[in-house]
Image (tube, rainbow over all chains, first blue to last red; front, side):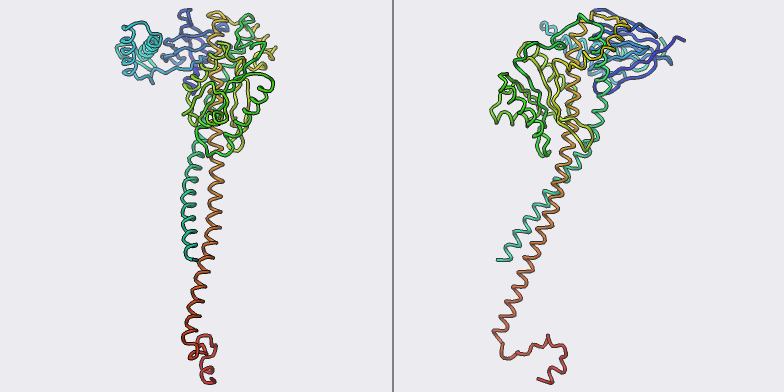
Length: 143
Length: 317
């Protein structure tokens, strides 16, 4: 088994997730997807709206919808700071889907930055909670 | 006459009792909310600690990454005050403490020839400064007893926007820090530019940061641009939570002493009322006795019931 590292996902209101993981996959602002494994070099990045995957040390994957934030890696510890992040299991899929449809409607009328942001959030939520088909969500087995 | 006074007193006692019930209820509500507010203050600590860490690492490693929020402006012409008070009163000296601290500071600024801008958080700050004819730049209210991060975000965007537009040159935050349920203090803290101690003092952290050789993505200046507003928001959020916890603590204390006072008042009023009632009873008896005496004074010169030995008394006289 691969070496593990400590991962913490922190929002202003509480610690969302804290535990051991073998890999963390997220997306930086303008930089594309990036994965961290144990003993990664010190790293500091701004992350964009995306699905962040935490590959747990005891197996399984914890998905999160992260709506912007920062990631800091140092001393084999990863901290993800986000002022808005949700665990996959806490996402209301129907609400996210309705929000997506609403945002798409607005977008058809013309460009609207707010609707675009709402659409991105809805996409991140839906993807994190297990894609459009409605399978999975939460901690999924295997990889 | 005396009976009227008694009725008035009874009415007052009843109204004090009703007030006491209300203040007691408010005291209990505030007491229960302190605990929850305190937990929220605690829960916000990890995020604000970690974001401070990130700011430190960035400031230490990205030497060239500079933004006005970090650096400040050389000449401060307009100072902005974010004043955190409650939406409601009945919380003792809570609002007064914050408002007094702010007003003193503004007066000093005006004397020094500087301009000021007030951002009032909570209805009490707004009414206070409006009544006294101060300029109010912005108001936020309706959430002070239970603030959310979205509230902090709205305030943060407003403040950072004003700073970046050059409308204000420095921002300070005035709030009440929650230390324990028994002690809180009014604080004035710089918000923008950041506390100098935070970014400059740690030369050892600077070395550590440089030694750690952080990789950045995207480049440090871009991260800094997105990080600074978040950091300001986190600071505001922490201050809001502290203020909310303090508000509940102040209200609990104020309402406890109000309840105690009501009890004291009820005791005093009852005593006065009892005396008034006794007075009126005594007066009535006097009237009856003197009336009876006036009617049949000749026949009953010897009042039977005060005789200690009725048999000998009737015999002898």
